[in-house]
Amino acid sequence: MKKRMLILEDGTIFKGNAFGSEEASVGETVFTTGMTGYQETISNPSNCGQIVVMTYPLIGNYGINRDDFESIVPATKGIVVRELAQEPSNFRSGMTLAQLMTMKGIPGIEGIDTRKLTRLLREKGPLKGRLTVAGEEVNVEKEIESLASTILPTDLVARVSTKKPYPSPGRGERVVVIDYGVKHGILRELNKRDCDVVVVPYNTSADEILTLFPDGIVLTNGPGNPENVEGAVEVIGNLLGKVPIFGIGLGHQLFALACGAQTMKLKNGHRGSNHPVKDLLSGKTELTAQNHGYAVDEKTLEGTGLTVTHVALNDGSIEGLKSDQYKAFSVQFYPEASAGPEDANHLFERFVELMKTSSRKEQFNA
Image (cartoon, rainbow, N blue to C red):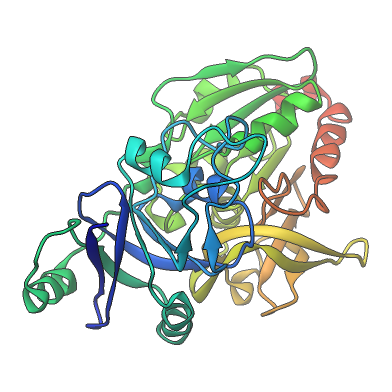
């Protein structure tokens, strides 16, 4: 097996075995704590531009199947694991993890101390990292110098969003999904409730969206800093009050920005399928799947007309908001899970009910 290195911008080096693509890759190195769900993690568009460290020590043991993809073309920059399962065992398995990553051009490294790496990232926060070419000797000093001066891309949403609108038909309420990096799980949950879904590119104008006669709008998850999504805040601002809005992940942050709040980068983002969140409206605590490095800054909510509906029990950060003026709400976590617990799945029912109780005539005369 060929060797490769993971080199971090602070000069830390991890040596291990290469798998997947043999090409080099540069990205933001982050960690995720899910014990399962590596297929969904790799194919989640929110991981565009990131080298993801799997904290669970054995990855790939149930293989890759046809059903658990969250996108067709994964945009993850690399995967880091402690031990890679060479022979998966599961009745749904159609190929190995290494085979998928080779097909999709995603490099991986295994056989390193992922616990040490995770502790480092917890201490310093996400670091720029480089996975070297498999089997190639490199000048480490030059690599570190080059990495330090590398500017990571900020157009991540543009890279993963659909280029053209497409339907996911149903017979119920018409939902326009603004694709900032949509997970297939969101579309599955909307279709399960018979919603007539139309997915549009992230840069679609408010006027174009309203010509589709939506009963509601979903602002999806996606990668990167919400302040880098050009035009999104203006579009959402023009849609508020016209139709019910449901924001998820990055969509939650963009909804907050459109209402006048601000966001901030977390030292350690929330990535995994075991994050406890308290629903302040019901008083219940739900386990949630999450994948984000930014959050809404609570200190900036005054005067925005937003009320906090959910909080993270681990660090107290905002996990949900609702508008006091408009029929609009959002959550930072993934109510569709994929992978993870489905405790918050009921939020899709809440959104459908909001659409059903809204008058379309009122919407388009607003």
